[in-house]
Image (cartoon, helix red, strand yellow):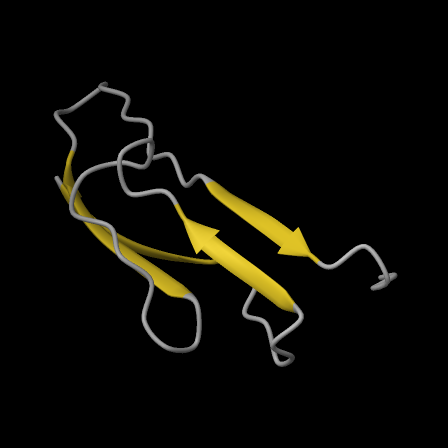
Length: 66
């Protein structure tokens, strides 16, 4: 069965907070769009399982509190 799903990572609205998507540690074929949505199409056999992974880091200046 072909499964299409979407997950969202944070998107910074201020330049003092940077979100870095790590494509080397995320499931291949995933890349966030400008709004942070990551989409996959996975083929899963009957009774099968599949794992999708998203890895990102949040970097802030020391004076930013959130």
